[in-house]
Image (cartoon, rainbow, N blue to C red; front, side, top):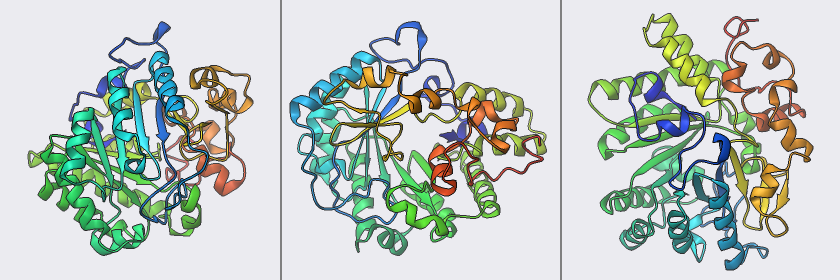
Length: 391
């Protein structure tokens, strides 16, 4: 994640210690030796009430037959807490379709972890929002990929936009911090300015703009991804809109996700503008580190499979039904996991010689593998020029 509001506008927040310092601070204390433990995405169900065209999990309205049982799920959460995991992100499918979702959010919170919910928002009404608040969820991210017509087309359901907006408002009324998740494609890029207007009107506190990752049903949208020049223009739009909100006194955290070239791009723009904070931003980027796949972010599926991240679902590191996540994640006898912890020595092409390698760590390996057939080739979505990266 690249926090535009923090880097470009110097808007500080309570989670800065997680992103810009070594080691995650969690309520039960950091892991021994100050190691950073991963944020864990738990795709707790593969069932969903929508049919989103870019779903990385290829979720459907049918429930998988191999879902973990209650005791297995409880043991998993206890293991994650004991391992020092700071955040569990409950995702899916649609996590609100999981029969024990509220109990597990409450349990994760009681165990000292932060519980985050990633949802399409369409199932949240006043009662659900109150139950989420009582369970202790610390943040709800609602996926919206455009205004009404565009979003409904992406979601495969008429009225999905209005139901999601209703869910956002119910969360806010229940005192839950709620924000937006927006995946950028050619089909919805021109609606980004309108999304910022929506943020202003609805008093949204946080928004994440996701670059497309070619996984699940998203793999069929490769041709719908922005080209490199359009991505640069989109970044300028996001930066300009974030800066305008800051100047208007609107406190909203704006982040971009899944393209770590965004960090150097912000820095280079600040250099061009002779911004006195440019070198401070470079230091923050170095401290936040590069790609976290297989290191600072991990994923557990509904059937117990462990993946390097939520997009890399075809790579299975193990299964918590046979070994706890803590053992799987610490076992570097797995060649892929070992390589992902030492990405710099495996990268090829322009990535290997990039002067920002210590910042982006080779960007998105999922996208490189999907587009090039080689997970160590350069990420095709990196829009920085050879001159900008020092070649």
